[in-house]
Image 1 (cartoon, rainbow, N blue to C red):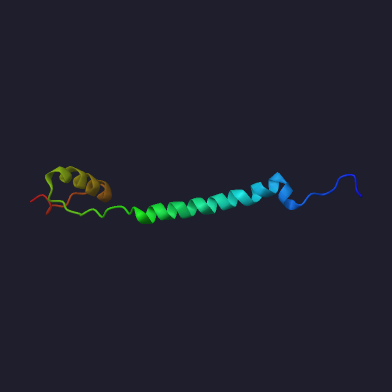
Image 2 (cartoon, rainbow, N blue to C red):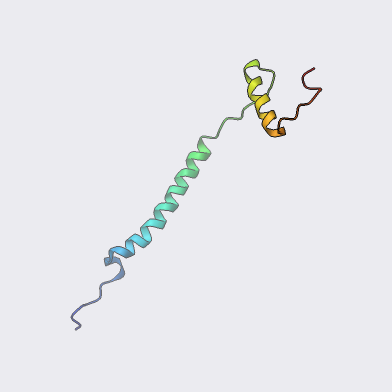
Length: 75
């Protein structure tokens, strides 16, 4: 009989840590997937006719084109 008997793997705390951390990550990813699929983002209609949206659309277009103005857009 040896003075330090070896214990089975499940008696070591580090073994449970090595198993539990990846398992927790997998469970959390499935929970995240369930939440994402059950609560999808609403589809927004794209219209520029609304007066309150016009400054935002003009700003977006200005940023996307680098400040170039289209002569036909303002007339």
